[in-house]
Image 1 (cartoon, rainbow, N blue to C red):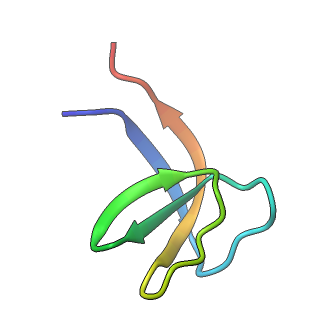
Image 2 (cartoon, rainbow, N blue to C red):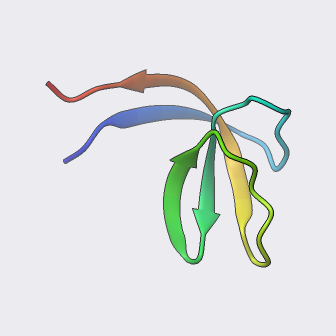
Length: 52
């Protein structure tokens, strides 16, 4: 099991937001712009808990 993130669900993001997104059919967390065909923003990451 990896790190855990808390995500505020919303379909849009502002410049500089860290988002949870579906990219090419896989869930990921990204601070880079999401702009591909079929890529979807799931929400804004509000907290992260790193596994020790």
